[in-house]
Image (cartoon, rainbow, N blue to C red):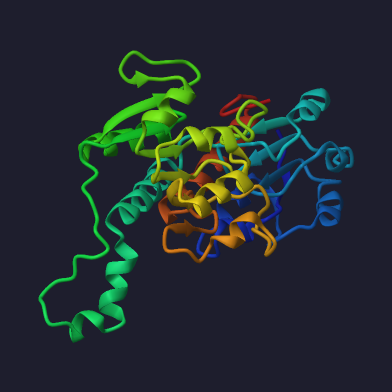
Length: 318
């Protein structure tokens, strides 16, 4: 296949420290820091390949992409692409699976550990001088507890969920799993049962019609009082208003979240009411983005395009 016209439509979401010149030997490359919907429509008109991260490629956008042959998403999830329309048009779609397993699982565990030991509060006691001004050698409030022996529920047990499970076991937790297809080597439970028995719940599912709003008011009511709840999957997996109310009522003892149904999170958002609370840790969709993970992602996309040029179907979704 001859050299391709390639466009990277939202390079700012990949980080300024990542080099994109590896794509230059595949064809003619245009790199755009960000792209509005109108700009996307204009920029996809005459290209063969587009590389995206967060840009939405709906039917209304893709109808203008007369020459588009391949979409490469710099992510594992691809809910921002109208794959049904791509299939109609014969536009290939490739994702990148597994590249961020270590990065996402690392943040997941960091959130749980920070919550379990009240780490921000203890750090602040030193930073604000109260420890130095004290009369004793240590500060032991707020009280914290070991997580060894607690039940850690993992919703979604792909590469990331399994990695989190390995760490949870190493920390002495009992791991229970909710997985679409149960596996023999884990304790697999229906969702309602997992919610009832878990002291810690972390979520690692893709966004689909089945998983959208899977954690809502009813599901929060089933959880243990004071549960640690972490979402590093997709924002819309949570009914965010119901989860916010769960924090406000004290039902949810700690909420960690890296993803939102609207990104960036607007000011008038349910989580805006709780974002400054000590038992809430909201991060700006960065769990996937360790430097090593981002480099790995770009290398995988390069191989996906190279494979496409050679007529192969590496990491093909459509």
